[in-house]
Image 1: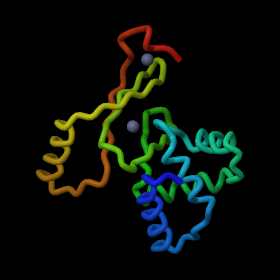
Image 2 (image 1 turned 60 degrees about the horizontal axis):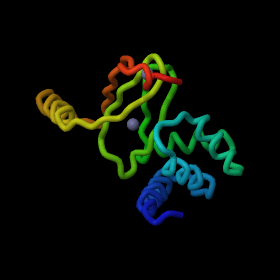
Image 3 (image 1 turned 120 degrees about the vertical axis):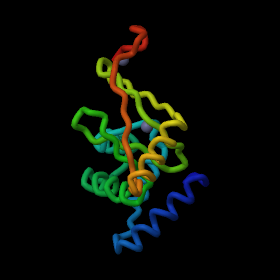
Image 4 (image 1 turned 30 degrees about the vertical axis):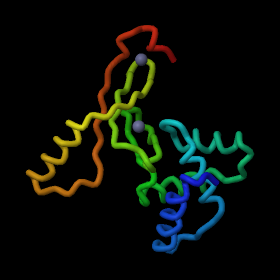
Length: 149
Ligand SMILES: [Zn+2]
Ligand SMILES: [Zn+2]
């Protein structure tokens, strides 16, 4: 267990207790893999990745733990326009948005403080309390060398 994941583990434990969910080692095993996953993933990708690492956690546990982690804000759900739910860790990560290539499927992240300002302003003006937002830019990589599967 990595020391920098301690806070995430504590948060998840509190969340499970509060919601009267069972605290099982399997759920924390899923959390550990989520925190170590580089980039965006689907539930099945995480499940396969865990299998590769000799984990015995069931697919159902992976699915329902991802759902719990989303409610607990440790995990973000993303929609990249392909009818698939993508996840990424929210823990210790900066707000960011995505560029999605519709040709090769590559997803790039970027952060622009002006976008954050616009969102805050719009919510203030319209008396809206922000919980989440999604901002995706779809297009194609300009450089054909970058645009490979
Ligand atoms: Zn991302
Ligand atoms: Zn591309």
